[in-house]
Amino acid sequence: MLFDSVAIVGVGLIGGSIGLATKTRNVARSVIGVGRNPATLTRAQELGALDEWSTDLVQGVRTADVIVVCSPVDHIARQILEAATAAKPGAIFTDAGSTKANIVRRVEAELPEHVVFLGSHPLAGSEKQGVEHARADLFVNRVCVLTPTENTPPPTQERVTAFWEALGMRVNYLSPEEHDLALATTSHLPHLIASLLANQLPEAWADYAATGFRDTTRIASGDPVLWAAIARENAEALNDTLTAFGDRLDELRAAVATKNTDELIRLLTTAKKVRDDLGN
Amino acid sequence: MLFDSVAIVGVGLIGGSIGLATKTRNVARSVIGVGRNPATLTRAQELGALDEWSTDLVQGVRTADVIVVCSPVDHIARQILEAATAAKPGAIFTDAGSTKANIVRRVEAELPEHVVFLGSHPLAGSEKQGVEHARADLFVNRVCVLTPTENTPPPTQERVTAFWEALGMRVNYLSPEEHDLALATTSHLPHLIASLLANQLPEAWADYAATGFRDTTRIASGDPVLWAAIARENAEALNDTLTAFGDRLDELRAAVATKNTDELIRLLTTAKKVRDDLGN
Image (cartoon, rainbow over all chains, first blue to last red; front, side):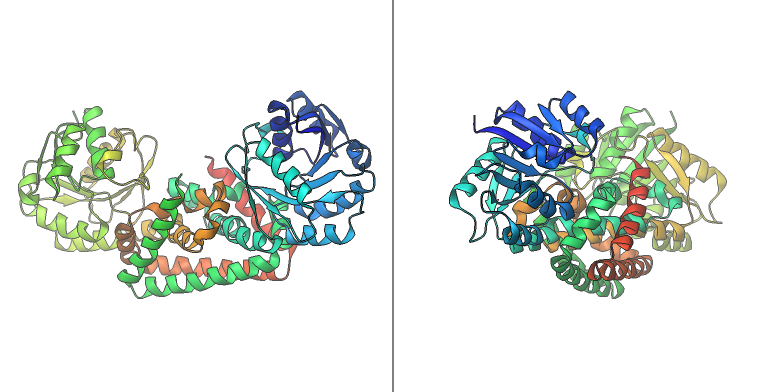
């Protein structure tokens, strides 16, 4: 077995799925869940995602080799630093946050020396939240981005890589800053734009929202509080990304207003190529 | 049987599916396809969507009770007017175009008096084009918008309603202008926005485009020429819709730039409610 004990802080869709995958794939002997709500933790244990649980962060992480913090992005750094004081020497901290630069910067500045940290972002999820939707195969063939810095010990990078690969993921490496820029474009922008589109639908026209509208706005069903935190944590990169999107929108508006068919076909053709290349 | 003979002009995904559904559900004794490409028409016949076919529009529609024109939106009015000269007295023309005001305005102005016309828009489709993807159940439980005007004879409205209902659709009625405004918001805007998002993805970041990006951009795989024609035909309504979207984007950018959590949560919460209410 890769690890003796894994602690998961925040047992929702992602944390619960990490627990299920860790148990199902025999990645660790024992999985400990840490959260605030005993009912949720009990349910996670019933579902087979946890061996034991605690509502006390410091207590819960004490014996773990690896601690994966799956909380909302604006809680991650604080929880890692709080848990680190109680973790055993050599314990590895990582996380599942959708933003990285803020978290990595703060944790690297303040982490005690007896533990190590490497930021992770497993690109898996769903607009369905909560441990009830957790799945052992949520991570299979998905990409996990690790964000090492010049402070990351190579053995830590190897161990964290091995952990996510053991859950079935393909691991990539980006700097925290490049991660945040890339994800602003590939995840945070689409989420906000999907929400704008949903907000533009009057109730009277809901009957005319067919497959295209439904696909395009599906992620707007995500948790507003989680996504507001992501937008705030990644505000700088997202700002640049929104500006670039606004420029593209202005070009499009000009092409529609002037009925410029060549320009519309050019724009739609490049988009079709990008999307076709992604596959389903 | 509801009709003796139905002619379908333009046998792609929509026209082919109308043929299959008409045959499967015994809506007409005979289905005649009209198109430009003999190979496509032969294939449609092999798939069971057509009884016979012609590459000659005037020849193909001569015996039909109902003629459904499923061509790109910028060809529909012209084809109806051309076919009308050869159609038998009392023949009913309708179409499957995604825009209505331009088509209805022109056809009503120029249609010969021995035939009738009522605009239709069956809200069904796929980013997959072509008769190979045609399905007899494409229309089941979907909405079809009919766009009657003060010139539409009530019996025509009843017959066209009966036709789409026989294919499994729910029929709604809007004026051509309201149809175009509604569809600008529910279909044309999302398509163009999905294309902008796809165009903003650098190839190097394709690995980081997960489910959210894929859902949000799926319709960008649609046919660029068809969609450019739709944008041009519905340019006025789309212009207003894009302006409203631009205003929403400006509000969002301000909320991100100022890290205004309350405003972000408000925006995301209303969007979640709209999207949750739509269901899958």
